[in-house]
Image (cartoon, rainbow, N blue to C red; front, side, top):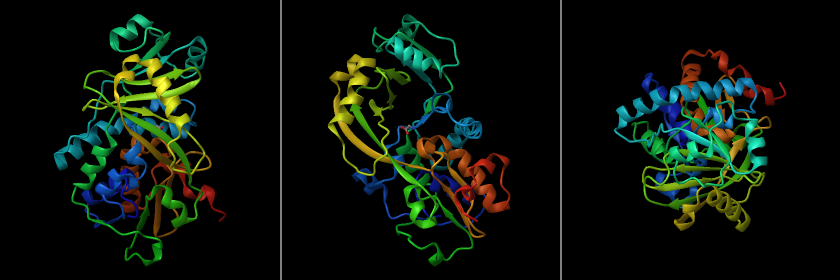
Amino acid sequence: MVGGGIIGLAVAWRLARRGVDVTVYDPVSLAASAGGAGGAWWVAAGMLAPGGESVYEKPALAALLAESARRWPGFARELTADTGHDLGYDDAGTLSVALTADDVAEASRAWRRQRLTPTVLRDLEPALSPRIRAGVHAPADHQVDPRRVVAALRATGVPVVPQHVDDLGRLDADRVIVAAGMGAAALTGLPVRPVKGQLLRLRGEPGLLRHVISGYVDGRHVYLVPRADGDIVVGATQEERTDHTVTAGGVLDLLRAAVDLVPALAELELAETLVGHRPATPDNAPLLGWLDARTVVAAGHHRNGVLLAPLTADLVADLVVSGEAHPLLAAFDPGRFTCN
Ligand code: GLY
């Protein structure tokens, strides 16, 4: 297994549970991830929101997202049972809210649920601004803490070798799985590009927010994800850029939108600014399947790496063990981007 992020570790754990002898190669330790060297999972907010993020996706990807969301509770239960780790899995649900009349019009294209009035929204989430015009409650759109998930996956007993792999041919293995996020491009020649996201972490007290808030604010989309320890993750920009710069404009946009949604956030400590790169493909859908007779790819998950981890793990483990692809994988064959 090349890649020890959430996808690589989840697939490796599922393979190990099926009795497969698996080794993960990843040069970045958990400690180095905390220092900023980690993959997209270190930065990810951990929203498990097929309803919130998939509404404009093609049907095959929407089906993949929905099925993976359905598998998350079982995946979390089993991982906690195997490791004793608390994953920060939170099923309070998501409130999608809109600030202005134009924002309500934009949000209405995605909302499929009963519209809630500002009074009902503030009963559910008292910290919301009284300026919010409308919203919906998506109780099945949960969240998990990706840093805790990766720490748990690293504790499953699957060996992780701290080594950079730049040539798949040199690995002594019958089968090779490439789950290296952005690194998949150089290893496979497949078109994986970085989509920059800037995020913030605000340090608060637990309980300020009960739900994940997904907000439409003056034409911008922002999300607020409350962690059990009181931190609130504010995300995210979406930029076709490769740099790691935290920009004044990025921070300004995120903070302005966050405080418009929840005014009390202005009092919190700005504890972290973060930059990550979502590994994306030309059609923004993942690469899941055989690249050649020895190599499987599980990469290019773009905005959905955390959400898709359980299903990717199950289906790629099945593929490696049985050789047969689940019908859900048909639309995500890496061969759609190769010439032969
Ligand atoms: N899944 C949220 C993001 O990529 O910003």
